[in-house]
Length: 327
Image 1 (cartoon, rainbow, N blue to C red):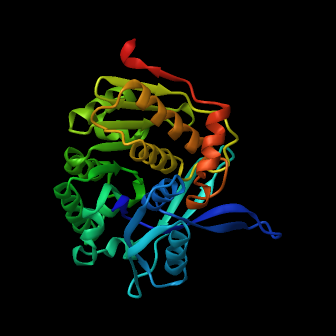
Image 2: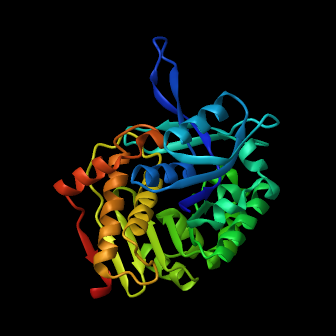
Image 3: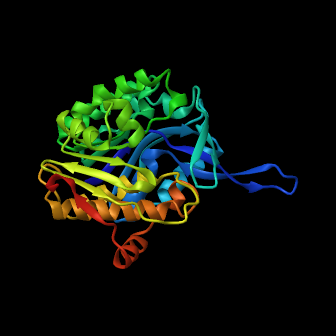
């Protein structure tokens, strides 16, 4: 039995890392991809995890698979295909740590995952099945993702969803929203950014979280970058303040937030359908701390904090949390 199995993209983030002696930008090879980042965070907090996806049988794909194995993530569902290259993303980082992307993904391996290549036993034996929308942008990966989602739902796993909107990978925002609307009624737990919340619901974070719950989810988080996050469940809506840190790279912050939240939920045997204020506060504070630590380091997977770092930070300072439902 796995705690969390994720399906989706695994890729190389070539992150800007200074300049050469001749003044040209140097790019650092960082392992990433939102589902893989999220799993790494959960694994570093003690969860048993598995990844399902496809990369090229090239230097990048072999490197990515080895990284997952180093993070104690089950890679039996990872396929290295010599027929397609590994997806690459070049990431420019501004002085505040915010990013802009250039993706090289046309006919790349992660978009070519087929239904027959998925080990459904990994999904059926998992407590949480996690996915995002990047595996919904192209066929055959879209059909493969929907098949995996159906299997997870039939098996009674908790369904976790991160829209993870990347504008240049969609024909337009309407296609992204349509894809989200098809899967949201099947999801138990949803994490989205403020931008994604507005795109999908047309509402500000609080209203967006309530609308997502109305679609069927039991737990919804809307992340606000340095502004913190909103976490909603049942009768409770909590707002948590962001922690002031020296941000170096915001890559993976949302994945760290969600991976740590899912890890605490599972380790504490919490029921997302019946979370009280105290449980929600613990989830939100841990997630905010993990994501704050994440942005102080470079890269996606490499920046996910360890359990020791998260615990140490929580012992020093816990983010302020307000129950908005009491106001």
